[in-house]
Every structure is written in C-alpha cells, then in structure tokens.
Image (cartoon, rainbow, N blue to C red; front, side, top):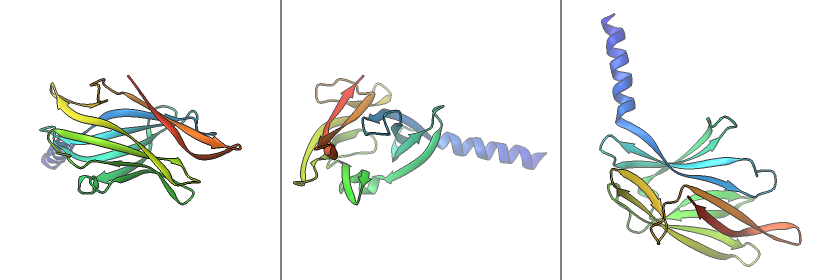
Length: 166
C-alpha cells in the first residue's frame, strides 16, 4: 500500500511540474485539410517558465493525434513548422526570446515556391497578468491562425497569407 501511495504521489508530482498552455488553433484552406485543426502550445513549468513548444494535430474529438516538439535551444535558428514536397513552407523563429518573459516571433512563409519568395508576419509572445498570450503588434490577442494557400494554374505554389483572429 505504501508503494502505491508513493507511485501516485510521484505521478502527480511530475504532472504538476509541466503543463501545456494553448497559444493558437491553426487551420488552413489546403484542399483535403479544410477540417483539420492543429494547435500550437507552450509547455511550462510550475513557475510558468516555457520549456518547449509543441505543434499538435487534433483529432475529431479534440484529442491529440500527433505531437511535434521543438526545443527552446533552436528558436533563434527557426523551427520548421510545415514542410511539404521536400520544401520548408512555414518557419517560426525569434532573435530575442526569453523563457520567462517571451519575445518577438517571426512567422516566415513561402509565398511563391516557383520564385522562392518568402514573406513574414510578426507576433509577440508575452507573459502578462499571470498568463502567456500571443499578440499582434497592435496588442490584439490572437487565438486563431488560418493559413491561406496560393494557387497558380490550379496548383498550390505557396502560402498567400496567414490570417490572425481572436
């Protein structure tokens, strides 16, 4: 009985050490994926320090079907968030990120794959009022992100835009 109590205490102690905080739900108008939802989360310790980023593919009931994790050590060089047909499509990076206060995030996306032209959107990840928030430069809180694909002659050639909303 003592061992069972110790095991239960240990399990709850580990789960209290880290928690996922959802930053944004992600969707796209990519043919065949119109109903697919992803989410970007930050994994935080008890003191709310970020220890990792995760991109989750959600199932029909909201359960996590697949998780891709990103180390904080790699954020300056950038995380490849989307890779298709042998090419990086979306890259998330930051040159001033701090695990306690956040930082400016750059979301670079392949605008035109035929000409290898990229565009970027900038957002801020901030710890304010006891919680982590993803914000536009106008300080609007972002809860949803939609990726709009770019087509040419019926073929997908890049990302036309990334739209943010509450």
